[in-house]
Image (cartoon, rainbow, N blue to C red):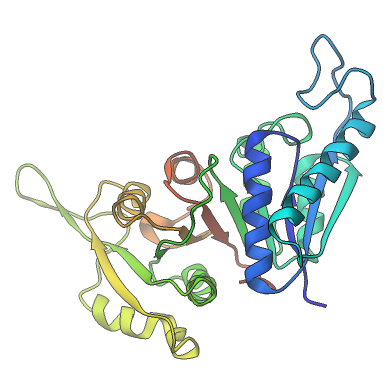
Length: 290
């Protein structure tokens, strides 16, 4: 059987959105969905209880109930989808990273509570972005409309080539247009050329046509190039994604120039916190998923 799509769940509204998004991905891919909650201890009990604590049950029983309800909700929308749930003891980051070893995609909400508190802040975000063994999608808010174009942020690095493979695969799965986004040099108010961290290639057209050698494997995917002038890589990608109502933004976890350390530090936080669509991060050790 194909490796499953794995989603982190903590009972919050954002986790619900991530779970429904992950279900749609699993349906597209023809694989199973695995919903995981990491039960970290100690748990703070009432009156400072976690949002999912039902007072008359222990947190473990309460979360098992919520997991069952989440699985039921998914199967109401996708009756043929195989859905399993797991309640695991341990820190959120380590638990999801371990699960990603046998997954083709890892999905998480932008923010969570309880076992996944602060999921996309600090050390957990760095763990997921830098060390997951499959591509990771961060889902923002409750807008599950993801049928717009796929945007690929690319700079020619090895990480960008891996991201290109994932982006073309996603565009094919969704029957969506793919937009290859490059950042250009920009001009200062004094008229001087300011070299952005991500260089503009004079041969960007040729680079796009080849799409790092990936496009030939996806002949059914329509794609085009966008050359963006922006103060930063994150600002440019956010602007393009918003303007074309993108359904997904795909980036490598590390790159050259303006995309260097993309998912480490301020650029990653900008994309995760402000991108108008889900963000897929593809790292150097991720070969299983697309």
